[in-house]
Image (cartoon, rainbow, N blue to C red; front, side, top):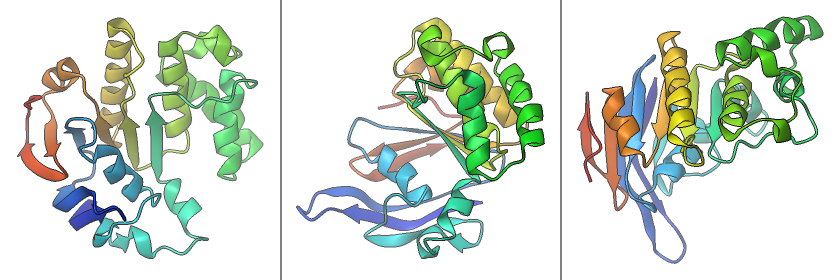
Length: 226
């Protein structure tokens, strides 16, 4: 489904962020990418959503070279890849419902679809009772669950979670990880980056370890080993 083919990223100051990286991700996999700060994890993710271009090598989604997409094709492609971040990125003056509806409107979904799907996806992340709450009325864990709901409401093939629990306490971290598991069980490919050893060790899923821009481990049922 996803393949990084000998990908390197070198900036103008000759700093090497990624160095000849190759690996694939199959449909419906749950893959964690780990490594120290500056290892190149976020750059890898930005390449998948065509925010960064490799200096050399290619990134494929199915049979498509992501960086050969035309400017007009990129928005349609990105609708197939949901993304959540450490800092939530919710719109502060919109309710949970409106934050999610906004993502659907941007994708051209109808009012009927929005009215049907938003409550359903909030129920999936256990926030049906917070549908009309604004972000300032939600805890950090609840904000992240709204962000997850927004990322999956258009039914992407892939969900990217870039340090999604970095600002959360252990209780909310556990909740978010369980939701990511549920989403994966429903058939969505999940790519997670995290520094949280406990999360990685509890998942028992594939772990790709990156150090100094290179893949140093790729374990089918890995642990956090650095």
